[in-house]
Structure formats: structure tokens, C-alpha cells
Length: 465
Figure (cartoon, rainbow, N blue to C red):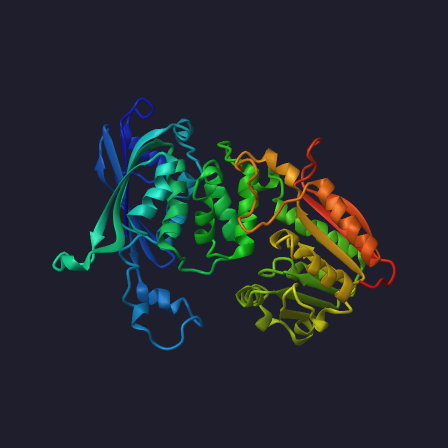
């Protein structure tokens, strides 16, 4: 794989060779680094006050990659050894950039700090970029890059075969070096459409950090998030909320210890606080997704049984992997069940629990189907308590990245105001014999309340549905 970065002399860069300071790599040296998947080499094929080019060459070891995937591939597959990885820009290139250009990505340059915030005249070339011309244009043009993308033919000797899915890409524009590198760091694996390593929850932090200042307002934000996070719904939802909170701000991201916790974490904290207050011994996580809340429920003292339900078998499979069910002790495994079940239908296994949680679930249900779900949960299952969280639609006006009337998630069927939520919850409580109390989650606005609203139902009597 090859990536070249060229800076030319300008009003903000009197000597183009100062690119070496920003990259923390001396132009007179060839430097080699061991990185995931192979070896990265940084060199400067051109250095002068007028023009300076840095090249990152990544030599991938396909055999080493296969050896590093123990347990994930069974048997022999020629595709493990013969593929495009050594030649086309993939997530491996982003991993190499993260190690080799870490300081530049983070906007740090101790020897010449005055250069960090200076926009440079840059030209970036990637001779083999995956994704096709159209997708490349959709990724980079909205950021202000002038994009030249030439499709690469499958075989020059057989033109009838047409173009491949790879493109020779040249990007020209005026950006700080940190901005340019972060664009590449995120978008190269997005164009690749996959990652060559396990996508864990810390990938959300990477995406939000690298996307600060541009991703929140990118027209393809949803596509970028889904592809970057391997289409893992819980992670995509968390990234969406955190990016929306950033509002496309161009201010540098605060250090972790100064940053407000993301809303998704505050929501989990609020639910766990209610679990600890109500002290159930058995808990249902209805619509558990990929298990983000289940792990924390398992850690609550006094909870002897946790059940997560989902209508998607693939989500349950991810939850099982995320929770490492196969590595649990027998005692731990006995406390947890993951069941395929729909809120639309009565499931006798779900009767008799102390507490049920519907965290960011109801807004994904068509409003005309919601009464049947309510009857199922409160009339048939009848848990001792129910905790419900849902977005506060009034708060959306404080997110500049959301157009008027737009929901926070493409799959939301509605997002209620506080008054609408209160009316709905009070009606449930009166009909099914529960009391209800309300609270907010997240930073509170004097006029619009908090971004998330919470209701806690407690059963008082047996009432026929």
C-alpha cells in the first residue's frame, strides 16, 4: 500500500520541508516501523522549500495476518493468502497511520507548535483505493477536497472486463495536516467496507475523536458510522449520539477527563441506578440489541437472573460474543439467558420477572402497534417494575446537525415531547395497576428539558387488561 502527502510553499508554510516537523519524521531519514499486519516505512522522495512529499509504504504480510487469526478460520482457504491486502488501501493503512503518524493525527508538534493550526496546500495520493469512484466522491467532496478519481481496469489486456472496484485517487485541498490525516484515518476503512481486526467498543471513541469537527455534519454520516463500526447497531447508535452532541464543532476535543460522558453512558448509568434502587432479583432487558446493558446488569449485586430478548438472531449472536458467554463460568452462565422473542407476541417464558427494561425501544415501534406491545408487557408479563427510556423530541432543536422535524435515528417511528410521554405513561399506569414517576437523563435545558426521558413503573395491584 502507498500513501503520499505533498505540501507546497504558501503564505502559511514558508518552507514546505517543515512538513517533516508536523509528521515527526525527519526528511533525511528512512524510518521503518512494525505495525499490525506488516511493516510500515516512511520516506521523503522529494524535499525542497517549495515542495515536500512524504510517502508511507505499508508492506503487508498475508501469512502473518492468517496466523494472527487463530480460531477464526477453519481449514485452508487460498483467499487467506492471495488477496488485495498488500496492494489496496484498507483498514490496515489506517492502523499504520495511527501508529506512525500518531502525533500528527492528534495535532501535536512540540518543536514547531505554531504550525499545527496552519492550513496547508496539500496533495494526497492513494494509487489503489477501494470503493469505486462514486463512493470516493461522496466521502471526500463534502469535506472540501478537490477529488480526482480514476477507475482501475480489471485487466488492461482485456478491456471488455471493464473497471474494477478500485480507484486511483488524488485529493487536493487546503487543510491543517491533522484534519487531512483524520479524514483519511476514518474514510479509508469506510471505503474498504470492512476491518481486518475485531471491532470492539473502543472503536466508537476512535471514530468520534477522529471525526470531531467534520463527521457530525457530513451528509454520509450514517453510512460512514455503519461501515466504520462494522454495522454493529449499539456502537452506531452510541456514535450517532456522541457526534450529534458535538454539533460539528471545530473546537479541539477535550481530554477524556474534561469531556462530559456520552449520553448513551448516562442512560446506562440511569437505568442501573434504578435497578439498584428497586433491588430486583430477576431482570428482563427487552430489546437488548447487542448486549450493551446486559453486562452491567450482571454486575449488580443481588440480581440472580438476567434475560436479554431480541427479535434479531444476529444481534443475539453479537451479544453472546460481546459478553464472552462461552468463557463464562457455569455459575455465571446459569444467571444469563439470551432469547429470541418479539414484543408483538406473548411469550410465557417472560412472565414472573421482578423488573423489565425497555431502553430506547418504544420509539422503534409503529404507534399503531404500540398498544399491543403495552398490553403484552404490562398486561401479560406483568413484571413488578418497568423502566422505560426514550428520546425527548423537544431537545432535538438543540442539535444543529438535525434538520427540523428529523429524528435522531433513521429507524425511529416517533420522538415524543415530555407532555406526550407523560400522557402515555400515566395512561398505562391507570389501566394496568402501576404507579409511575418520571426523570430526565443528560444535560438539562431550562426550556427543553433533558435529551432523554425516563419513566419508572411499579406494580400496585392486579388489574385485568
